[in-house]
Structure formats: C-alpha cells, structure tokens
Amino acid sequence: DDDDDDDDDDDDDDDSSSDDGADGDALDGHSSESDARDLIESFLDLKDPQINWKMIEFLSKDNMTHLLMSYISRMPQGPKIWQENLDVDFDEQIPSTLPLYSNESDEIRATQLSYSLMRILSNEHAAETVKSFLLRKCQEICLHALAVFHPLSKGNVYHGRVVLEILLNHWPKSFMAALANQRHIQSLLKCALFRNLHQGNLNSFFLDLICFRPAQKIGQIQPVKKKLMQMFVDWKFMHYLLASSTDAKHGDDVATKYSTFFIDMVARCASITEAGELFDGHEHLIIDSFMKGLLDEDGSRTLWHRICCGQTLVQFLDISSRPTIMDPTAQMAGMLGVVAPEPNPNVLHTMFETSLKRLHEYIPQMCATICSGAKLTPVRLASGEVPTPFGQVRLNCLELLTVSADFAQFKCGYVLGLLKFDFWEHLLSMSFSHPQNNMYLCHFRRLIHLSMIFRRRFLKHLFVKSQMLERFVDFYSNKPEPRTTLHGYIIQMLYDIYNHDLRDEDDEDENKNENNDEEDEEEEEQQQRDSVVINEALDEDEANGAEQVDGNEVGEDIDMEP
Image (cartoon, rainbow, N blue to C red; front, side, top):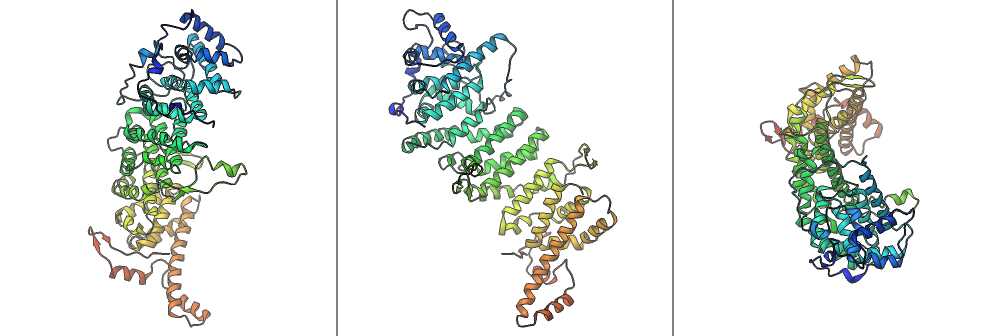
C-alpha cells in the first residue's frame, strides 16, 4: 500500500466539500450539464480509457466529480438533494439478492458506463494519475460507492463494492477517516453493513475492512480503525447480524448469507486484536440466538434455516475453543511453498467457557428434540430407501450435545449428569432404528465412550437394564446380510469398553504385584477376570460415593484418565 496523505486526519462532520455545486446546477465554464455528460460518456465509451493529468484537474472540481461518480451511484437527482434523504427503516424485511442481469436496453447501457468507470478507477495500469485522483476525491468517491447500496439507488452493487475495495487498498487511512467522520457517509455505511451484506459480495469487503492490517503507518491507521470498530459497536451491529441470521422474516437466502458472514468474521477476527471488540460480552447472545433458530419453538423457520443455525453454532464453538489460531489468509503460505507464520493467540478464546456453559442450559431442550421422533418423508439412497430418516435437525442437536460434553473435558461428568436414563435408552433404541446412519452412530459411540470414562453408571444401566450387550450380539449374529454401519460400530464400541476395563485391571494388579513374575501375573489376571464389560470394583466405589440427584442421577462417579 502507498503512504496515505495526512490531510484527512481531522475530517469534520459538515460534508461541505461534498456539497458545493453537487447538484449539477452550475457547471464550471461554459459547458452545460448535458454537454458535460456527453463528454464523460464519450470518454467512458472508449475501448481503453485512461485519465491524464489534464483530465484530473477537470474531474477534481466538485461538481464534475459528483457528475462522474453518479454513473456508479445512479441515485435520483443531485447529491445535495439525496444526501438529505438517506433514512432507512432497519426493522423492515431485508430484500433478497438482486438479479445479476436485465433485458432492458437502458439498464444495459447504464451498466456498461458504470463498468467502464469502475475499470478506470481500478487502476489496471498503476497510473499515478488515478491514484492521485482517488486520494484527492476520496470522500466524494466513497460517498457515491456506498450510495449504490441505498434503496433509492439503481446502481450495480458489484461495481460499488469494487470501488470501495480500491479505496481501502490504495489509501486506507484517508478512506477509514472518511468512513469514521463524515455524517452522510456514515449513514450510507450503516445501510450497507446492516442490510446489504448479501449483495454484490459486499461481505468480502467488510471482512477486509474489519480485519485490515496495514503494512505501513500502523501507528496512524490503527487509531482511525479503532474509532471505526467502536462505531460498529455503538450501532449494535452484532445484535443486528445475529437477528438477521436467525429471524425467519428475512427468508432463507438472507439468513444463510448473514450467518455465513458471521462465521467467516469469527474465523478472520480471531487473530485480530482490535476486532475482538465486536464480540465482547456477546457469548449469551450468540448461543441464545442460534439455539433459538435451531430449536424453532414457534415453528416459523424452514428446515434449511434451522440446519444453518445449528451448523453455524458448531463452527463457532470449534473456532473459539482453540487457544491459538492461524489467520485464514496466512494458511495459503504453506500451499505456495512459503514458510507459514506462527499461529496467533485466539482473541475469541476467552468467550469459550462462558459460551459452553450457556449451551449446557439448553441440554434438556436438545434431548427433547432428539427424542421427538418427528415424522419425516422417506429418503432414497444408493443403498436403498430409508423409511424413517433421523433428520438433520435432530442430528444437529445430537452433535451439539456431544460437542458440549467433549469440550467440557474434565467437567464432562457434570454435563453427562444432566442426561437422564431414559434418554440413554432412547439413544440405544435409535441405533437399531438407524443402523446405516454413520453420523448418528458416530455421536452415539462418542457419548458411550465418554460415559465409560466419566459416568459409568449410565453404561452399567444400558448393559444391565437395557440389555445392550445381548441386543448388540443378537443384531450382529442374526442380521449378517446386508452388512450395515452399525455392525462395525458394535465391534468398535465393545472393543473400546473391553480395552478400557482391561487397562484398569492391569493397572490395579501391577500396583499390587510389582514383584511377581510377569508370566504368573498374566495367568492370574486371566483367571480372575470375570467380565470384560462391567468393572465391579469401580462400580462398588461409585455406589459407595454416590449422591442421589433428581431421584435418578448419581453424583461424582468419575473415573478420569490423564
């Protein structure tokens, strides 16, 4: 990036430089507005138009700059008029994505002129003239590029986004100063940020803006960027983003793209210290918003919307759980053969514990959803028809339940203690109802494994009361053809349980018989081992130290492994 000019450090709030003659009523010299438009259009119609220094002087006059940039913004009337009519109702439904094309000849012509101007400003030839013009008229260019995203504009949102990226890349300090200090620009910026993230790839521009890391003049740019981030916080952008991602009134298209922007922002901002302000104190808001969307208690959301909420929440927990993180933009270094930089501290990691605790409060609702048994339309797969599909929403709840227990680590026993015996029985029964569902069985096996380590009474209940071993053996022996996913999981789960108990007994015997001969010790173990399923010694210890909870649960019966 080139060094930024210092003239824009103290931009005031009067927009006077943007208003002088901005309505095109008094053009310089003897040219009329119509003549000026003809001149600009003939220039834009050239095959390879380029700006020279003489044109810079002409176009840098305020009225000519506004006239030129009006081919990008395409707002009604002149800037002096439309700048005073920028109010937007942010509570209204966010409009769907605009169409990419039009068959109307006037629209095609206007788009061609807008595209030509965008190419000139993109400075493909790295001309100093264009860079000078961008710096000199940064505020006016920014005003018109943002105006494209206002409801009154007929401009091309892709062209507007490209112009904004050009200003950020060439003159970040002047550009951010304009965004943070000019009243009308702020109004247009808020409209673009809140209601147009799904238009014209504007989401990528805002990610670049929020996560911008200057290569030069860091000390001068960072204070301006910090002011910009604080402005987003004051606007309560995170509240609006989460509401738009989970509220049914905006439709699937908007909700999907806003939730995608949220998780992309989480991934990018995790390594940007100043961007962490956007997330501060919002742990409960994030969990509550996406759980509300997933559970959909009011029945207003589509299946796709609920799935999107569940998947976004899983990704958020995954990213925030990591103490360090690599900036996604830096991960390309390894692919290009360049030594990748060291991971950065994850500034969002401090949110993880609070977020996880909040998620635990939703475990009863998730269990109820998993056990609901909602009737779904049969699904035809390559292996045959699935008459009673498990369903993606129930799978999302099961995944979140498993994740919440897994991430709790040594507090996993507390999380598992929130589950009831009848829920475990239901999980076991569903494994036979969905023997081909690899995703369900994967989470079921993980929960069984965690209970084996932290809450063994659940495992004992399944073996003794629900006859899990007998049912597994019966299924494996009497339904050999065709082989299902469950056949493999039965072998794996029983092997895990056997191995875990065997290791426990080996450790105990080794402590008691340190001086015995190894061969004699192995023979004695084989004779004394009465079960590969239930470790009686551990069960007796659990029973002795158990505390009754809710008439159904037992207290700290945790057999932790290092």
